[in-house]
Image (tube, rainbow, N blue to C red; front, side, top):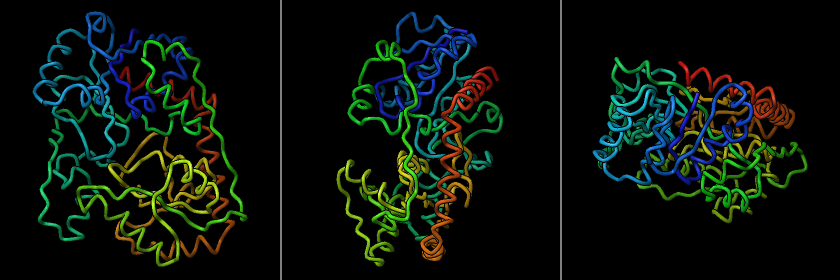
Length: 356
């Protein structure tokens, strides 16, 4: 099966497509031959399936009508068209492309697909929650197109950024991201994840560093609240360099990872690899792959209204064995996903959602 992927030199695209690069030989042995394109030319249509990276369209095309017109052309020339939605949250979607695609892949989905029939304030289920929680009524918002019942069958769960090249040298990672895809595909990619073991000797009990530069109050609420609560405990939260941040989480028992533009972010996996405990708003509303969000087993959740934040934090700080047990559990789970068995599982999963 010949598969052409239209993508771009975007950081998120590189992380998302990384497992395909790692497993190119395994996928070839299964009969899947993948080519990568950054621009549209006649040869891109010579395939059995075309996979469209949404980031390509957000970078190259600014107008909705331009994108839909192009999708109409692609639809007419290709047997199978798959839209890869690489937006950050469960709620940010591109359902307006549905008439032109056979499948719609998303990195994380609401468990209850019927919720996509609603319009969320700020395009996200959690910003909609905070709109009502904070009684916000003076902010404008943009609502995405609801999911229609007759196209729900097109929606499928793909995979998240956890299968990206985490823990590699940041300079090499940035250089590789900017390398054109026709050269990038020639490299021999492997997972080189380095796991740090938990320790009672760490310098900090809990840490959080993060930007507050969000235009909407509902997006920044979690971060504001976390900073307020940690400052009451005498913990510094001012942002600093990425290098210092990585050093700090390696020296912390617990690290907090709030939602931002999405629920899942690089920070989650950086915390796991650093051997700190992932303390995060509840993820019970979504499904994703790889799923390293098992309540009180691989991470510790707190309620979106922060009603149990301090209580749970105190319980953790008074039980180092519990912290270590959760960290070992998530390490074991994450290691499996990037092991040979895990990569075999990824390839079989890719096959299933591709041929579905």
